[in-house]
Length: 276
Ligand code: HPA
Image 1 (cartoon, helix red, strand yellow):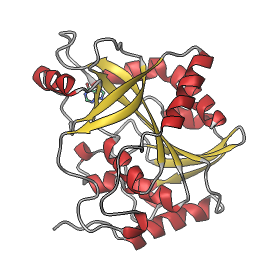
Image 2: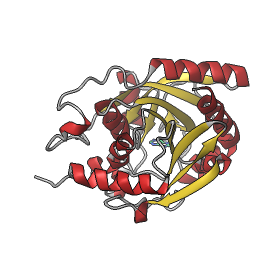
Image 3: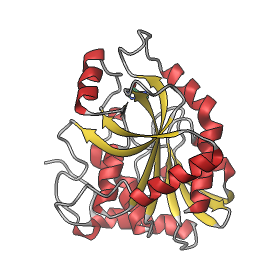
Image 4: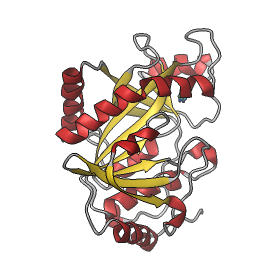
């Protein structure tokens, strides 16, 4: 049996963050995926909290992602941005990749925007497209919640049908329309990585109904569902998935497309937060 964190660990993490942000309950949290890291620069009255300083917190090892919370204001909203997240492929257990979400719930956070870069499986997508994730497929049987349940966070068995919040998705679409930004809908398939998929795996995922594929997000979503945090998830299509163009998929391409789209991605997210 592997050892998970216990409730008091999460409480100590949250208490540390509370002590830094003056006990304010952020109106919303956001996880910044690859390409959206600069978004934190648009916050004012910023307080930065490095993961390494938070008791029990994992520390992000993806070289281009930072490892810090940035708390600040966006218009009249208070925002807790996660700059750097934890991936299974880095070697973390799934429960560790979900650790920040339970910490957020102890901060009183009720709404969360999750962003990521993903491969496009849907033939209608193009690199640079933004997609509102409406549901997901996880083929791996592992769950971040395997092991002893922490009842303070929710029930042992819980519903997954409403975590992708309909009204947040509606707000995202209305905001995108207003800004003239194309926002499509899609289903995200989780693959553990770090290798990109094979063409056969992508054909399988398409057959199963997936529109996007990525290596993050789903454990965060599962944690949010248990502790009843409403989620808006937006993916940036950074590349067409394996086998779709004949071209090799590279990390450089993924980061390059993220860099190109980051301005409109950030303005969409900014406007959504102001509207919520
Ligand atoms: N597959 C998995 N994860 C990804 C991809 C991909 O093609 N692109 C960006 N993240």
